[in-house]
Amino acid sequence: MTKDEVVAALEEIGTLLQFKGENDFRVRAYTAGARALAGFDGDFKARVAAEHFDDIRGIGEALQLKIITLATTGRLDYLDELRASVPPGLVDMLRLPSIGPKKVKALHDELKIDTIAQLKAACEAGTVADLKGFGKKTQDKILEGIALLDSFGKRVRFDQAYPLGMALVEQIRLLPGVEMVELCGSLRRRRETAKDLDILVASDDAGPIMDAFVALPEVVTVIGHGPTKSSIVAKLGVGTDAITLNADLRVVTAAQFPFAQMYFTGSKEHNIRLRQRAIELGLSLNEYGLGDDAITAKCKTEADIYLALGMDYVPPELREDTGEVEAALAKKLPKLIERGELRGVFHNHTTASDGTATLEVMAQKCLALGWEYFGVADHSQSLKMAGGLSPERVREQWAEVDALNKKLQGFRILKGTESDILLDGSLDYDDEMLAGFDYVVASVHTHFNLPEAEQTARVCKALRHPATTMLGHATGRLLLRRPGYKIDLDEVLRTAAEHGKFIEINAQPSRLDLEWTYVKRAKALGVKLVINPDAHSPDDLELTPYGIAVARRGWLTSADVLNTRGLDEILKVLGR
Ligand code: DGT
Ligand code: CA
Ligand code: CA
Ligand code: ZN
Image (cartoon, rainbow, N blue to C red; front, side, top):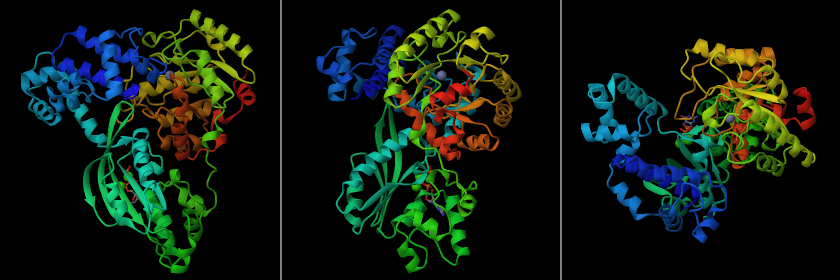
């Protein structure tokens, strides 16, 4: 097992123990141990080999043994026994906000509830409200939570679906007779979430490929097994989660491949527009060709097909029928920002607040990524839970930055802060201190439940503050887990445009606070954006491609994004 998987196993033990009614002390031994291991930055494999973990605070001898057993054998009798003794539906219920292991245990013990479906029925019958420690309010919250889970359906985040898709694709690529293979559908368009995997292969001999596909190790169920099309349910451990998704595989000939690739990449709406365009030209477009053998034969790539339709090539991220067809016909598509174009980042944390690495380690990682600057933006003083910096500690950090900047040639650490937006919309330090920062990221971390008008006024007031450079976390959403706070984003964007403030594309794949549709609107209003990893560790600094994907879906060019600028230009923009 990897470190992440061991951490997940320890957390699971803690949860299962709570279901069993174990005392808090024993539960905490596992949850605290899991956290301690998660925060361990050293060489996990070497530690496993040396059988040595008990020097880490929170990990004792007994836990050390379990960690080593999990890491080396991939399982643990103790965990297997716990799992067998707890109904699986109870773990499912934990996905509901507002309900923890203790409440789940009470529901199980008192009302014999073992599944979300039973819980929903009991809430609707009103019996949950009568349970000690619950009440009508909690019952309503639970129902709301169930409705929310339903509305998310079975979609999976891009960063979790893509590794599963690529695990399948890489194995298919090695099969005899496979000439080309591509992961199409919403994943190729880089949507934030995916419903299923659409895999396309070019080959003259589909049969053996179908047989091998339904026998891959990730397959848990075979839904269909046909001559050129098969469907499976696949499962893969990604980080600490087990990801399950349907996957369709289709095999076409090499000549058909670009047409099928275009068709199965979608979106459906984009396809419909292309088909109409083909009809206008007297052609008929489908997943096999253009209805004219000579023209079809000339199309070796998707770009050739667009050319045959009199259009520029449309990058997959833009294929949503939001104006790209017209722009491609007029040869006016933007030249989208590319991964390699970022030259630094602004919203990042260090050990000074809730990050896991020091200023120097974070800066060195940015250097290694080829960037010219690292903006440190630790939390501000009122966010005590996350180690927010008092004015005194800010000054200490500034001194540390100055000392490091003397050492680092051709690279600069920029002094920033992620200032909390207080309830009344003001920032979290006095004006004198604010003026000492190179830049300020203003973010909402508290009072998520304000009415929309109040939340909008609060954020807009913070944006108007002369010290504010950019808005962090535009919505506070957690993808597929928590909706964003209620806010009029159009009003926020107008305010940003009026006062020349930047809006963040938060690149954390579990957040992606700003939807691509708003990115597009921001651009139309003349607002510039900034792609930030919101890094809490050196590894997090590599999350920017998820932000780039959102930027591309929002039609951004490098000129629309602040952090494609080099250091000299950045200093000018920031007035330093
Ligand atoms: P998803 O799976 O919900 O994340 O999104 P997609 O876009 O991957 O949708 P999916 O898997 O249902 O279909 C894959 C592609 O197949 C889709 O993007 C376009 C194409 N497609 C599916 N159904 C139709 C259809 O009825 N008409 C046309 N023109 N294309 C379709
Ligand atoms: Ca799909
Ligand atoms: Ca599909
Ligand atoms: Zn942050």
